[in-house]
Picture (cartoon, rainbow, N blue to C red):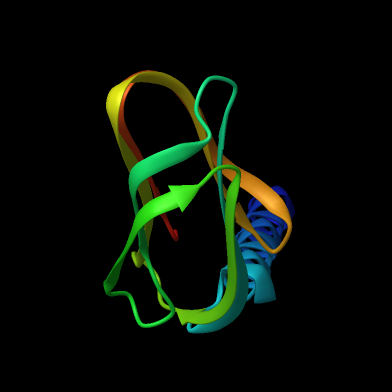
Length: 127
């Protein structure tokens, strides 16, 4: 009988510990929304001095078009985001070029890709 009681108490204690640990992880500040973030978009090229078009999601989540953008191009702003909000950055050129796109959130690179074409785009989703 004592053995069953000990196993029962160990099982309850283990369950409470797991629940407590999961609750701590769910309430972490880095994953709570909405939150304020700093966003930096970078467009660079080793072969072009300008892009016909640079397009990005702005402070309100709408698209902004920048025609004839000189490269390198950088845009920085603060934005309040919710879970599943999307950042996007794209470019277009008249001829194939080597262009690198990068999205930084709070000074951390979250998405980067290099293209060797006339157009490209990247996205980042807040989880």
